[in-house]
Image (cartoon, rainbow, N blue to C red; front, side, top):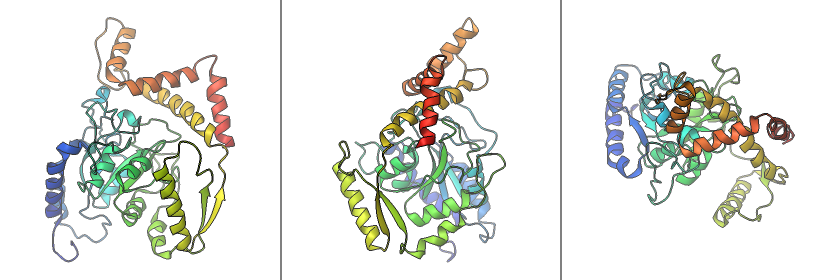
Length: 368
């Protein structure tokens, strides 16, 4: 549309603002909207040559645990109410530099701890296809906003499924890339050795475009990997001929939903028809992997969230002593799910249990 001159960024932004205003009350995808700022940026972009901007004039939203300069980042928690970062996360900066337009911050399970976007201090997000259902989590606000057509794409974060699972629940595309493919600088840490930023889009090509923009080495994140994601977009039209695809065995294991199993079988058949070579593999460590994840992720959460104490970060509650202030601040500031995970993480890191749980889980992770 921009290339043909059918519309400009201001027209497109106004169209998406109309969609947001019409649907947000029923869905609750956003914690905060930045419509005025988006219109102002769109007006500035209209004065520029779109050449060289791979996402010129494309609106997007950002999960509210990813820092945005001058716009509050709350992690859907009372303890960070009103916190406004002085900088943009690297992934956000890359999108802005590519010409994209930020429309607002999306809802999530508090500090990304949950799988339904019901554990938020700001209220629940609903699935746009059926508002009696959840959108998944913890990036449920981003997934719902994209599925509802309120933005063309959004950023989420994925620690243990928080991009992929809500993408599945909302019928869109979500990608967790290789660890280090996208810089974590500016992502509020939950479990640092698992956390990643990833895109949520309506189709695969859009996902490849966004990943190609946000990927690459970042000196602000020592775990980030060299090289960008340009090859992702180039590979879409190559077809699947000769591609080797591993299909996990145990499709009939107890607890696997029939609809999920049928969908996996159907997808495997489609891949094979398209020229891929399928190989069945067994994943014997699956059962211990989940236990391993919950020990390590909660341990890292306990460590990372220690900074939110009313002194270094976070709103402060009253107390006659320093310990009393800590208790009141963290007791009032954190929701129940976050408290549970901090308690579990502190337990497995504590004297007498560190070797039995944390160290053992690290060894199991290496074995897996």
